[in-house]
Image (cartoon, rainbow, N blue to C red):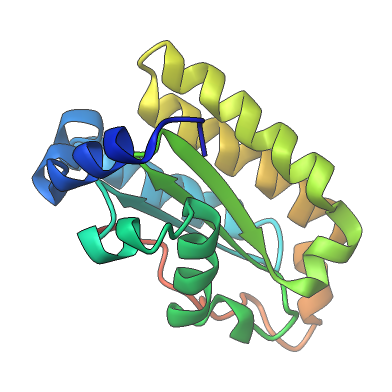
Length: 175
């Protein structure tokens, strides 16, 4: 989370609404993101989910909930930890805080680690600063896919199954 005073953060969240997400992500862009996730998941056994939130509830801001804490909360609520190979990855974008977080389950996280996830977030932020929100998310999905493919390639599912079951929806969520 970027350094700002508490009042400034409260103000930004107070005036953030889910309809504002459409300024950054149109329906076509969200469909492209959904398809990119689906395409990535054909090459590995991992599950990727993208969530964008305009802002937190005012009470969460007053309680000083960080975007990281919110991302972990959503990771749990969405069942990202409940995949067969423990390799779910959540990309969480909080527009009011200008923050991107990646939360990964223990199966993939033990191979990749904080430094790499942070580097992917930084690459996405560079795109966002140029106003390329869809492109930044697509780049993040591609980079996460590379890591999942390296550590959990599609051939892990076994010869008895032609295609793995999609355990987590690929549809981006807007809060």
